[in-house]
Image 1: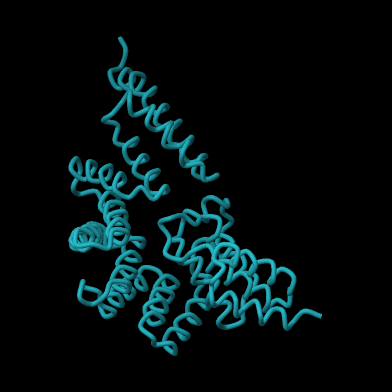
Image 2: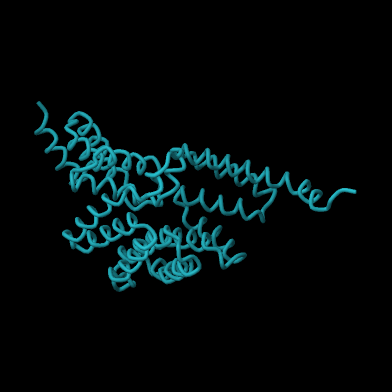
Length: 307
């Protein structure tokens, strides 16, 4: 007689394999930034299994990469209705809703801010160790104007929570808040402390695959590490590594633009006395944004170094 557990495993196995296959297929397409094809493939799968929560989540992710915020909101909201205690769903829903609110810049967009905060705060309460959620709250409270609930004080509370979970994340989060609140001296101190504590990051303690490294951290952290290396003119090779990580993983979900990343890369090359690469990087920044004042100024400084 066949064991019922074995029979159940045999019956369910094809579904697990199918789920694994389309997840891997999606990841491969995202890696090469082919979001349009990812959406088409997911739509095909969803037409056959419209209630598949894994597919719905992947579709929300794909819409997010395409900056189709309203569609992403619908996808994640449907998942939240099914599982209101999911940290991941709250985190993703709040993230795309925040992007939608910022894009609309109308009363309807302003009205969404309370929902964004509620979902992020719910996620933080559900998982006291979730680093990405706390980074999101740091950025939200830092970026929001005070009349919409923005607060550097609250941002620092979540930066402190990050520090309890991970010293490097905490220091760089504090540097981010202090820099945006025009407290440059405190920002510089925290950037320096963040660089000193880098060896506490897991990726510095073991050999990991490139894709695993990229997925381990909020992309903002890569940008801030590179910026700190420029600011203190130290660990420049590490700075190059992290700005490369940032540029490779950049998407519409990130707050810093590609031209800003090229500016940091150019400054790193300049500090490494690699004038030709510094000039090449700054030209890339200006191709993306010809009126980028900081890049125009940097270009003039680099030209002065040419023999």
